[in-house]
Length: 441
Image 1 (cartoon, rainbow, N blue to C red):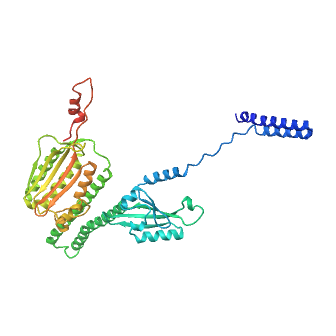
Image 2: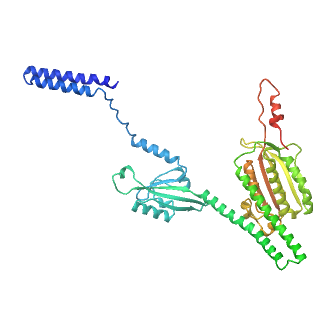
Image 3: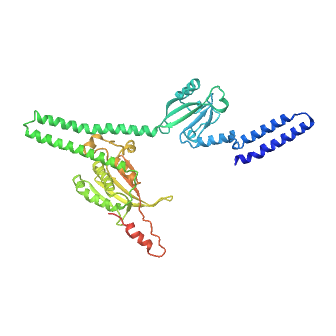
C-alpha cells in the first residue's frame, strides 16, 4: 500500500527533471552523460522509496488553556486539601477541600492571612531555599480537632522551567481518623490489661495466703475461696464481653436479613429479668402493643441489646424503684421507612451531661467503684452500639440529674416486598403473609 502510493510522486519528479534536462540538452547546455546520470539517480531513489511507509506526524499537544482546565478538574476531584502558592507565598490555586478547611481562603492573597501556623510557613521558606520536600504536622483545633500531615514540595511551573525559584504545593493528608483509631486501640489494650490485672493479682495473693499462713485456717479458707470465685467470675464476664464485641465488630458491615418480632423478644427478656428485679426492689414494667413489631435482625444479638439496657437501668437507676420498657412505631420522614423504637427508662439519680457522649466507649464508667461492685465490665453499651450499627439502628441516651435516664433504640421497620403477579389478584396478600413475610419470634 505504501509503495503503491509513493510511485506517482517519484515518477512525476523524474519526468519533470527529464523534460528540463532534455530542454537544456537541446540548447547545448548539458551533455548526454549528465542527463543519463540524473535519470539513473531518480530511478534508484524511486526504487529505494517504494517500501517505505508514509510519515505520520506526532499529535499536537493541547493548548495551554486546555491543559489548565484539565489541571483544575483534577485538583477539584482530589478529596484532600491542596494549595498552590508562588515564590512570594501568595495563594495561586486551591481546591474545594482546601476552601472548606480554611473558609476565608482567597486567591492572590498571602497564605499567612488564612493559615496561622508558623511551622508550615517556615517549612515553605525552607523548601523555597533548598528545593527539598518536607512533611510537617498540622493540627486544627476548631470547630473540632483534626490532624494533618502536610507535604510541602517544589513545583516548577511552565514560566520557571528554564530556571529560577519554583512554586510550592501543599498537600494536606488527613490523619484524624487514623490517629483516633490508634488512640482507641492503645486505650483498649491498656484498659483490658488493667481490668484483668486486678482480679489476677487478687487471686495470686489469696492463693499465696492459703498456701502459707492460712493453710490450716478453715474460716479464712472459706472466705478467701468465696472472694476468689467472685474475681474469677469477673474475669470470665470480661473475657466473654471482649469475645462478643470482637465477633460483632467482625460482622458489623453485614446487615441481618431475617425478620424478627422485637416486641416478642422484649416481653421474653422482661419476663426473664422480673425475678432479679424483685431481688433488687425494682418494679420492672413493659408497655408494648399486642401487634408484632418486625425488624431485620439476629434474635440473639437483639436479646443481648435489650438485656444490657435493662440490667444497666436496674443496676444504676434502680434506686428510683421503677424501670419501664416501652415500644412504639414511629412514622418515617423524608422518604425514610417507618421505625420501631424501644425505650428503657429509669427514675434513678441520672447522669451528668459531660459523661453522655462517652458512655458507649469501651471500659468507660461514670463511677468505677460502683460499676465494679455491681459486676459491670464497662463493655455493655459498647456492645449495644456496635450491635445496632450492624442492624442499621441508632442508640440515643437522654438523662438529667435527679430525674432519671432514658435509652432509646430505633430500628427500621421490616416490611416484606409484595409479590407482583398480574394473573393472581391475591399475590400481594400472599407475599405479605407467606414465607417471605413470616416473622421469627
